[in-house]
Length: 164
Image (cartoon, rainbow, N blue to C red; front, side, top):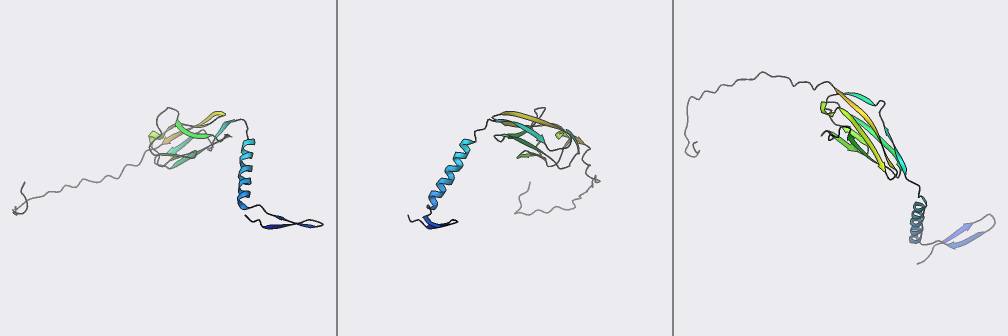
């Protein structure tokens, strides 16, 4: 393994040394990162939870798209989950991803209090938001029922078509 010469220039003289091979540099960087992680042995911190909405209760309209974000801080990074306070399953139109609770199209059944929980080795914390769903979906336009009358005036028998 050959080393590339490196010239160091100082204020009064210059020195020539050989640079370590790239693999040795990679090993040194990995070892430094691992050592830094070993030194970062902070005690776990209980999470703090923030629901990014102005009010503890929000009013939304049936059929509307709605989302609310929950953020959890702590050490180590808390895991975030959303549930309903009444222990009912989340509505089918709800998507939960990275702390974001998304209602694709709100229904009256989506109304309720939702709980965001953050949990880690330091403990858990939670915050709630109440969603009030107002209004109804508009009724589809009604159409008069058309009546169709069919009169058969003749009957034709074809031998290749089986009769019923």
